[in-house]
Length: 170
Image 1 (cartoon, rainbow, N blue to C red):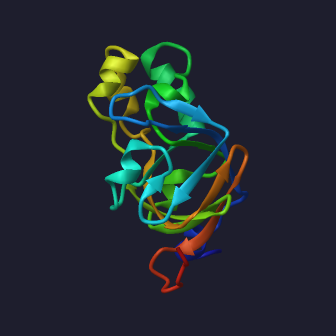
Image 2: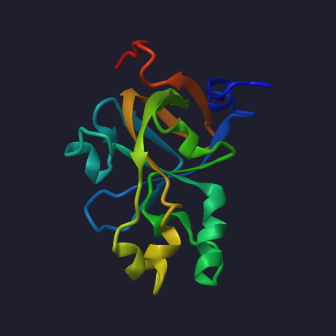
């Protein structure tokens, strides 16, 4: 029987980028893209966070499979990705399992840095109960360790624990 360390590092398959979006300005509509450049230590090119966020929240990711859950909790169809104001929608890999791990998406290497909790804006965008429907389903935040291009359909690959001492170039 595998130990917990083995279980924590076992992913049955790669994930996949299903949607990409940026917000050029605070509170501006989200723009859907087919490709984006992730800039190490900064964020996604063209996103308003990229010029001012050099910490743990350079990229926000949400689980595609959770969109249906959020919709069900609201008694409606799954919300469109742009309503949730995250940068990447990913399917096929548990994003929560990537917290504290390095992972590659396209050419970029990221590190799962935390949970992406909903903001009060979800009540405005999704309607009454939107904030609570998002709780536990808001996705994760990540910092960019190595710059690179991310395209729709790009694989999401686990690279191991963030604290393993391996160096990743910028």
